[in-house]
Length: 78
Image (cartoon, rainbow, N blue to C red; front, side, top):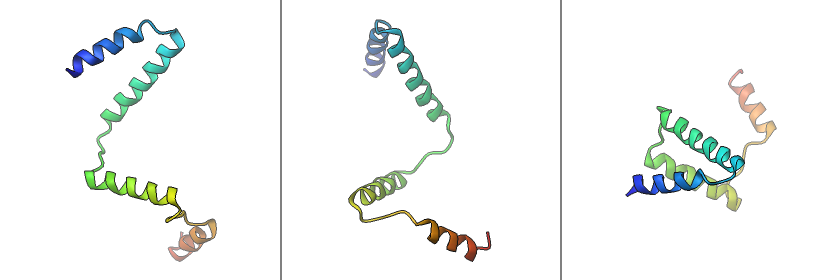
């Protein structure tokens, strides 16, 4: 079923204005490049990213300040 759906949408894409076709090509190229990347997150890692993003959005978590990072680099002698 997926192949038929992809073919249908790609056939319709060919009827779009050229600038939108170029957008579609860029998006598909980016997806293809992502698939070529050998690094993959585990399901647990994906869930951790989701949780952390939600925590940041809700204000339960924050980034380190420049001063905190400077202190860490100094402590690590970097």
